[in-house]
Amino acid sequence: MPDVTLASQCHHNLATVPSVSTKPELMLRHNLWYRGFRYRINDKRLPGSPDIVLPKYRTVIFVHGCFWHGHKGCKKYVIPKTNTEFWIEKVARNQQRDQEVWRNLEAKDWSVIIVWECELEKKRFDETIDRVEKEIIENGRLHEQRRLERQTIREQWLKERKVREEQLRKEIKKI
Ligand SMILES: [Zn+2]
Image (cartoon, rainbow, N blue to C red; front, side, top):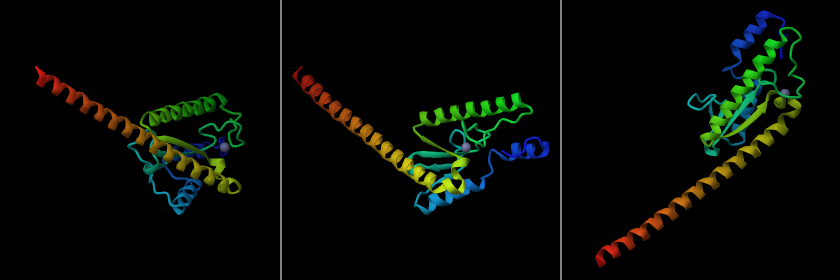
């Protein structure tokens, strides 16, 4: 978190936080591309306009700033000593919105991966991207499994309906 006692800098941050891609986010994106993942960015059709959308894996990624989204236990999430109430409330509102977005996405059958800004620092970057890659692949696998299950249930249902129709036809002939 930058020095929030500087009003102008603070305003600058408020204005730029929501949509501008940060450098760590770009690095994450480029690395995923390099590893063969294809994605859309800032998809406004989905709740919360996720930073990265991987349709094939039915997965979205949000890169969260540690201060703005209140990364618990993180050294970058330190509530300023001035205007404390204001910042606490601000971060709490962001967290509440994040949870709503998460729920809405899951209701639409999307998996959500959160990457904290601090996880993209140089010394943690490789470990983070390995973790993200694993999660993406696992999500894709689970979604494919669920899709096949739904397909099987539907095929079974169609088969049973056909049998019922045949039976009905036979009974009608008897009459
Ligand atoms: Zn953090």
